[in-house]
Image (tube, rainbow, N blue to C red; front, side):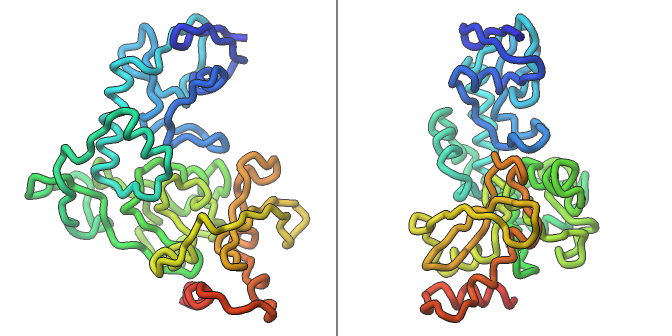
Length: 315
């Protein structure tokens, strides 16, 4: 075992553990946006940084391995200020309205004030057409945003990059960590960086195999089931009324676990548990999207959401 000190508390962790593992082992979880247990750490969001004695800079706890004798502070003035500024930059430029309660609580906890950069500036053109090295700031005194139109080009899922924080989770899930399709990557540099298909082609013309694993790891709602997107637009998405039922995928013998999200007796989306040792949260196109045969039994009463779901499937 390796012994380190976290906020004055001696902690023993197995070799190979990260500082985040050490913090969690004593109940001191750290905020994370780009980290997921089933993906390789890319340490890009910088909200999990901690202060390490002897280190010139703050270090990302999600990827820094614990070494014997380390002395770590997780709530020092440097750490709090860094997290505050990162959250302010994100919240002032990205739509975090669907990012979950944790993000909102962190903004309050670190007294982040994204509004200090001014009101959001109107969109400044097509972000996908921008050239690296040719970024121009907004003409006004407000905050530039990553706003762009929602990409709706297939019946299975949509891409709303106005909500994207560039956490790289979707790229990792599409690449080495899960699907090995490599249909998406980060294009551009600096503020103009964004997730893109090869040559920015529409999704049906890309290498995407529609496994939907990118949706499963997205923390902000930038990637979303088409059904959820359409129901939200129609003001019919009611998550608090949904039931989640765990079952086993019926398509093959692998035994993937599915969590069926059901509203008005209709499946509106499918996820998979991260802690399942078969899937680790990942599915194929059949498991994630191939549930329509369940909806067409012919003996179910019509519900208010049927028309919306049918429109999403047919477009």
